Amino acid sequence: MLKEHGIRPRDFRQLTWQDLAEVQDSVFGRRLFLEFKPKNFWQMADTLSLKYVSYDLEKGSCLYEQDWFLQYPLFAQEDVYELLRDSGLRQEDAIRIMEVVRRGQCDTDLKWREFIELYDVPEGMVEAFSRCIYLPPREKVVAELLDVISQAIRCKIRGKID
Image (cartoon, rainbow, N blue to C red):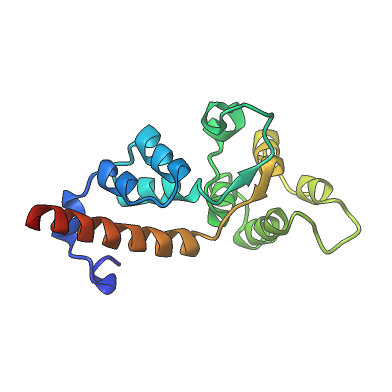
């Protein structure tokens, strides 16, 4: 995936979370990388996704201190599907539920929580889903991360040249 975007794996391996924090376009983005210190591509993607996600939290509370988030971390829409599959749901059911969580409503007269309760979804997972206001698609996060990595590599190379 890196090579397809003109990123040499050797250059990627030389990057640190500090390099990615440095090229963030917002204080919030920099703070995320400084706090989480991601070590690999997928940790970087999860960290970056936190710029876009929206959760129903109590004012002043930290996401990563929430019990429901620690048990069922949700960074992207596809995480809903993966958690459901890991809990034993069939693929078709996991896709249906993921779409209901993504939209925040279902196509029937049932409320989305009632719809999810028709399936054997653990209560803690339902709680986590109910907190999600917006989860970005992983594709969006990966595309943004590849741009951030490219920018960080360019900045690092410029820094060595100067």
